[in-house]
Amino acid sequence: MEFPGSQGDALAARLDLPDGEVRAYALFAHCFSCSKDVFAASRVSKALTASGIAVLRFDFTGLGQSDGDFSNTNFSSNIDDLVSAADFLRKNYQAPRILIGHSLGGSAVLAAAHRIASVRAVATIAAPADPLHVKELLRESVETIREQGFAEVQLGGRRFNIQEQFLADAAAQPQAERIRTLGAALLVMHSPVDQIVSVDEAGKIFSLARHPKSFVALDGADHLLSRREDSQFAADIIGAWAGRYAFEENQAPSVGGAAPTRNEAQDASVVREPGIVTVQESGNGSFQQLISSGHHAVLADEPTPIGTDTGLSPYELLLAGLGACTSMTLRMYAQRKKLDLQKVSVRLAHSRIHAEDCANCETTSGKIDHIERSITLTGNLSDEQRNRMLEIADKCPVHRTLESEISITSTLA
Image (cartoon, rainbow, N blue to C red; front, top):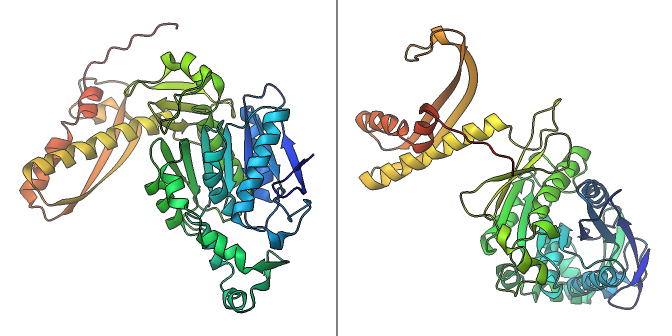
């Protein structure tokens, strides 16, 4: 389809729709000099339809199949194009609640969110914290651009005319303030081995943003998410996470001080309380679960071939709870005793062993659950202090809960 862009040119777009009910609409902004059909955009958008999310992806002015002159565009015009796309969705379908941006497109959605009132969730993939980061891609031509006002550069196998106004516009963007006052839930996704945009940029975005915010490492992925499994993983995470904020039936109160909408006011009674954990099927695969508590969300799944391995397994989550409690308990003890504890690391494994192999167990036959916990304490500590901290580890609340008699009451809600 087509819609008019910010400069009046026809912008080429594609709307990926789920097979069934549309639970929310999203806008996807592609990377610098890319198009709406780049792997990351097409694969993530199509995969999100499995979560009931319809995704509009389009070519910015002068790129892909869109009309217009790329040399006359800049970061500000990209923001304007996103606002035009949101207006198109609002008038013809439904206002977008989710913004997703890849690379410089991630910077663009962070900037555009303030101008699209319907947005409740923003996800960035491999995005720079500052749009001026694009100078890194143009570094061999920056001097030429400054001297003659423009330069022809080659990006992704294509040649583009970059004018000085493009860099000036990027330098003038108040991006840090936009991130601080985003007013929407934020999901930052980045590969630790990204060779185009360093993962340090994700750290800058995350540190600037206010809660609710989440970070997910796209471990092993390249900048363009060229491997199908990387784009599928990103889509699974976004789909499960966005439901916490953008699906109307689960919509949380607005963040950043904005007035709640009618739907948010009606839904205020179901806001999760801290300490109350809710687990529900995400609809992605047979076993993927969305676990939420307060403003926090995490995925659970079974490893392949039973599940799709998009999150920790139930027993891994159990071990994580024990490990986190152990580390926190030791940290509190060290602070109280003023010990030189620099770092705590806990490694845990779960297995089933024969009861007869357990010297301290009351059960003497059959098999029992066994958790092996290895604690590494880094710091200037004496042997006496280390041994005492090992004793303290056994006093962590989760450890005591697991070793005590537990009563679980189940009801049908």
